[in-house]
Image (cartoon, rainbow, N blue to C red; front, side, top):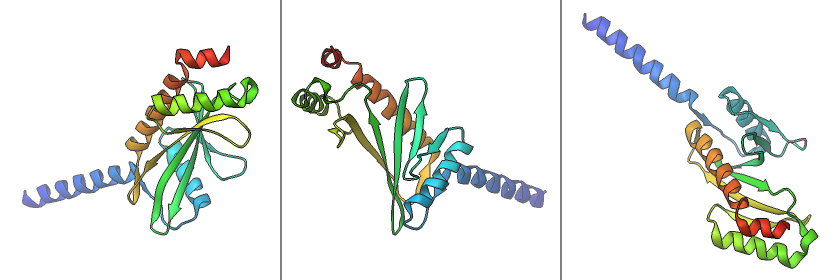
Length: 168
């Protein structure tokens, strides 16, 4: 009976450790492009659809519910994954209303929202950058919650009344 209990407990321990291994991903080396490939496969296998950009330098996560695309840039260090940068750009928010007005909008968003850094890119479009940091491994629940939070925060920030005034 003791042998059976030991075998059952050993089996359960291995099963639980196997589940936790599936819920997290260890990335080694300092190769960002290799990390992109591994992260893409890992997220897709867990039901979070992402694609690799044409340049191969980042992943694209499409939130169809909120009509939002988030670019994800894994950043590796000598010790493995350091962080993932997340970028979102706002459709229709460029310098067509004037450069000063767009910079004022970015400053107001930075003052009013603590979700990352709002900025004007080299092409004159408004975007926001945030990041999630890691120690040695990625936990699926953590990254899934980050994507959900970042997407919802971006949608909320862009639905404010003063943002609508900019577009008029």
